[in-house]
Amino acid sequence: MSALSDQLVTFAILAYLVAMISHAVEYALGGARRGTAAAAPARELVGAGVGAAGGAEPPATADAPPVRDRVAERGRLAGRIAVVVTALAAALHLGALVTRGVAADRMPWGNMYEFVLTVTWIGVAAWLAVLVKRPALRQLGLFLTLVQVLLLAFAELKLYTEVVPLVPALNSYWFIIHVSTIVFSSGILLLGVVPAVAFLMRNGYEQGRRSFPYTLAKRLPAAAALERLTFGLHAFSFPIFTFAVIAGAIWAEAAWGRAWGWDPKETWAFISWVVYAGYLHARATPSVRRNVATWIAVLGFLTVLMNLFGVNFFFTGLHSYAGI
Image (cartoon, rainbow, N blue to C red; front, side, top):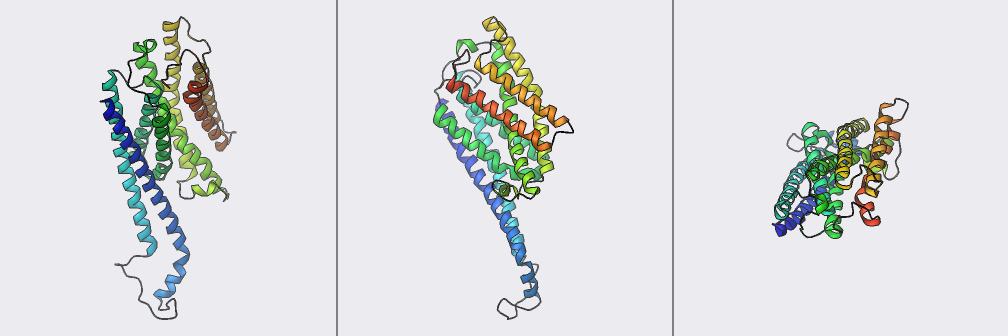
């Protein structure tokens, strides 16, 4: 089962990569379609009987649609393929988690490698749920699959560890309560940072900025839609994240005889909570601009990454059982 899990992770990474490439094709063909708009006047002249070299050419017919329409249709097909492949990758990803859990005879959250696998799956599952309700946001799939490929590849190359029994310190029913909620909320926050960054780029593009990286946002949905999605995801995940932090404190009281000891991971979890609370407060304050509030959300995710990777790599504490 452990070997099967490893193989499924590899196949999932490859499938996410194919999905990312398909999204990129959709994005590129959308750009090509815009580029053909400048040729419309020339086609009108051709339709009137004036060819490119002065000769007469037949007008376009219903059986021969304009080039820009054919390119756009190919782009939409690539986008639909990307969504299907993403769903396939998510199924392989879930299979990897289930088989690893069976191999370990426990929930697959016992070390840093398994934690990353679970968080990334929650993120992509939430993304597919968003697409069911809001298919017009499909262009964001390019950025989401890019994040999936990078995080899973990093987990495979740097975090991988063999299946081992659960560390005694984690052998408690609070393991399921605390870790399941922190994993779930972190997965939603992972998804939430994608439209947050996309909004910052798109908002700049709509304000007339044409330098990198704002030009990357010309095919993205409207900034207002991206901002609403960012807020909705964070508003949904923050109460769950809050409960996870409280549950961790209760577990610490039961296991170590104190609810809070300023352990590095506890400290950074508190920092993340404060930053996300600051984002929601800023978002609810009319005098704070939406791009300023969104920058706070991006900062919050950076603190989550610090808690996930930085604390385990650079600090030693009671939570130092990441398996790296």
